[in-house]
Amino acid sequence: MRDAMLEASRTSGRGKTKTMSSTHEAMPRKKPKPFPGGSGYDPAFLGTPDPVPVPTGPGLIELPYTHFTIHQDPVRRLPAATAVNIDGPTLVDIPRGGEAWNLDPRIGKEQQWGAELYSENRFDRGHLVRRQDPLWGDQATAEKANLDTFHYTVCAPQADYFNQGRELWLGLEDYILGHAGAHQQRLSVFSGPVFDVGDPEYRGARIPRKFFKIGAWNTGPGETGAVLACTGYILDQSNGLDAVLHEAAREAPPLGPFRTFQVPVVDIAQLTGLDLGPLTAADRYSVPRGARAMTERWREIGRFADVQL
Image (cartoon, rainbow, N blue to C red; front, side, top):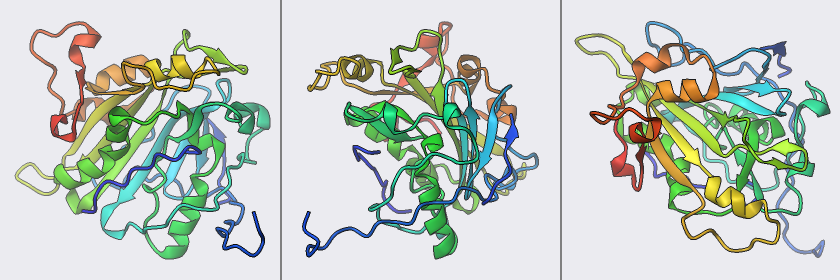
């Protein structure tokens, strides 16, 4: 399995929707404008006895793309949940360069945030579907998937600081693929913001302080047959967010802008209000003995070796 592909960029099919410098210098070729759509996330991709649906909730809008699906919250104007299939053996390496961010024309502008939320500040367009994850299959399909990830419906505002906590967050998919013994090197990843009534307001948007991620895989044939397994994580950007909201801020906060935790999947369901289907019962994480409060149940990750699979 190839090494973790970590991006720290500062600008980090006709699908059916439903409610739920010098000109002589060598310049990067501008990629064509994407046309969103595709078959989307496949719930049966892992080959487990029961399919694994996209986490969802009331009032969300389903937007399928190439190898992934978004459930957009039209009120918060951000994705509430994302789901992507990753086929490790057929991943295609497509260098980043020349892609432009676009609104998704299948929904209204008032249902999604665009460039106005990210201009002239220290917010990244944080890919909730990691750019590399849906880039698999034949070259043309991978190219289409790459362009699909550059829609504003696929991102959320994240502080543009970069530290070990965020590096761990970006590399979790690769670590799980390389160490969990996933059958056929296939993985499904679910992620999104943790919306909270106390999220701070900025330019009319409420900025999430936390994000969740769940990696799910098939343990493969064995004495008990194919079994769904998963682990859950929380990224907390509270420290970095407080600094970014003060637009004169330039230095990273002393406590570190991002902290990554492994958490019980049931806690993610409780925090987000999303229906996680079979994922809560498939969790591999063991809660520390005697832990009762949510903060006691979470384990901060300082390195990949701390991850419990």
